[in-house]
Length: 396
Ligand SMILES: *Cc1c(COP(=O)(O)O)cnc(C)c1O
Image 1: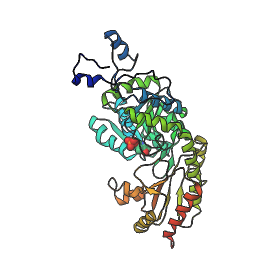
Image 2: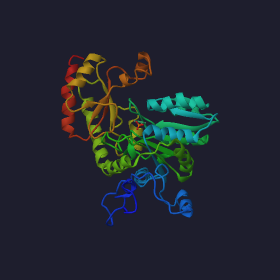
Image 3: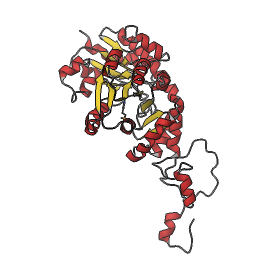
């Protein structure tokens, strides 16, 4: 639209904003960048603001809703919210569901920043957190109190790849009326759908396997309509919603997620076996290995594979581990995980600022522990890359 009666200055604000031809049925959804949709009158506003249609991007956006629908479908949950990062999903969920005087029981081996959220933010508002060994149900039961409102866990713990029995845990939590919140980033809905095993809320850092290409930062929260009602009103106030462009990319990534992660799980299982057979490797932590302490539990709750994260221990020699990292040709050292290419990380370095060297050792994070996020490469190329680099540890 432009008009001879208006100035150039005004016309340039309106020209070109409406399509000349009808745009029917695009094969891929368009990106709705618009932060607002035009409201025709006050009745229309009432209709829009009570959920009748889109009118403001933070409240709802078609691209973000598309991702939410896909996540709900994969997790078999009623409703999802899509956030600007995994941490936005975690902080929104927790802050909307607990209040001063409440108590949370959390696994001691959860994502580091989640612990910082508990320590730096929740403590400030008078919420108490007890950390417990979640591989031991007696330890969880002993931590529950009458004011425990939430039990918070991951299913596969980083970096030792311990498995949590969320069915037993959910039963214990529900017996004191606490909600079970699971960060299932490491497992993905292709290994396990926590809501089907007793969890009330499932969270993902979509940055990892859902995005899958190390190019989108996002998170999700999935739960029943009833719980989501509470979380949504605070989500709007915290403002951690994902932008339309990233939402569009995320939905595109989700289309091929099953193909990617199925191969990644399979590769992880094969790398675990190859590393376990390598003379330079002391041990491998991966649940499909028969010597993993929770092998049977993992096989029961994750029959289709146990994710693509594993760790292994070599000689505790910092120089040699550095040389090993340089010697790897395909595999890179990254501060993330879940991408389509294999990467490694060094837990003792990642946690150096949070724990003393002795604490790190006590927690099993020795200098020789290396974590792998397995990608979708041909397995023979991956195994060959690890094997040639492992020769650095020749005389162990
Ligand atoms: C990465 C990660 C997060 C945080 O996600 P961001 O998208 O980086 O905010 C939370 N939990 C787990 C298990 C993660 O791996």
